[in-house]
Length: 250
Image (cartoon, rainbow, N blue to C red; front, side):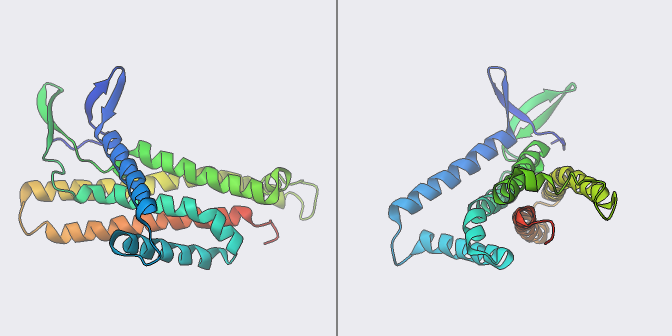
């Protein structure tokens, strides 16, 4: 197997290349949708089994969101997106723990040699996916700021009158704030991509060199790292939405 930064193409649908990360993204989205439909159909006042697990997770997330916002209205507004990001990212991260990572796939010719294009690859290890989630997260923060403060007031956070006291300082700080909004996209996407890609490479190498017993500690480590990265991504999204909704004086 050849380790590649870019996702491997499994097949083509016309001119559209279907990569292993596209397959995993579609699979995870399907799992979330089907799980939500099953939960909606079979929900009861006394939760059992699957509903009980989901309610525990969602209640913990809801309490966490409420502890950050300290505002019931904002909690209801922000929770759906934060919970969705957390669930999607953690499932994306944990895909790499499934049997078949780097070992089950299709053989392809690449630069004159035969390589294996694996079916299973964490979509968080694809910069395109992590960048897309980062764009959604940062865009949601801007939308939260505009809908809460109004367009003019929110824009005033970045474009300050330079002739108001303290002179020019406000404009300088506003410019830094504007740059930081774009920097969030880069930091979000590369943090998630770097951690998960590195973990996937580590697991692949260990499984190829020593397939029994030795990789187990690394598998448990990746479970922990996958959880932390999903929680960090979701919580930063929440914090940025909360900050965007606060007036400049606060």
